[in-house]
Image (tube, rainbow, N blue to C red; front, side, top):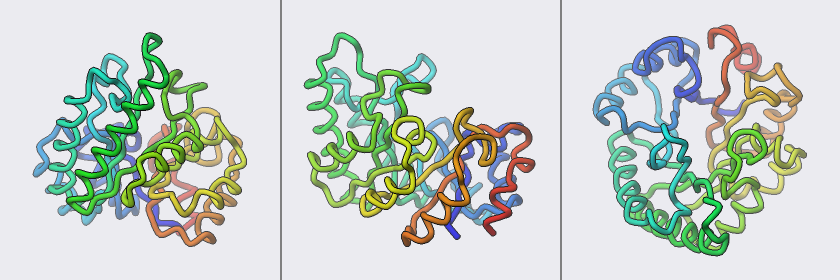
Length: 259
């Protein structure tokens, strides 16, 4: 059985954030992730992890101004210093939370920015982040996010683009974060893709499609997908990152079936 984690930014959202840790534990999860930790002091989050016997397995580097629609700044030439400061902040939180990997959101490309300039900036920023994280023995993940439904204009919207970036950066601690939901929209052929990409995958997330809700609400055969992940010998975490159709506990039939 894959090792499942709960994304607390999307699950158990009927209670305040800090109360979601105990809900995840009571539901049977042993690990959590969430989009960003920076709104809370690191020690406050660490207390919740320890109190509930949970492992922190992932969070994102600072994305810029999320509330106004920014989805990462790694591709923006005028934001390099801000990106580097965000890397340092992410490392501090990872150290405090015992988290061994963080994800870098590439960002949305402004219409006025040339593709070549966005790509060159992205490569240099990711190379810098990988170097800094390597000093702490941390892994940097890179995620492809669909540009058809959720994030039009996102620079990395296919696994192929992420792999091109990984090759350009050429660092041992950079991995692909494979999101089943996003890649079903952009590429399909999930099991064959997982087979081909598995040597570079450092983290997996999932939701059904369409709707981005729990398994069983859309078109993806998760029994087959989870079985394939297991058969491929993947030892990392597989994180539930969906919008529950009801109370989270009422949407965990897929989890109970896998236990």
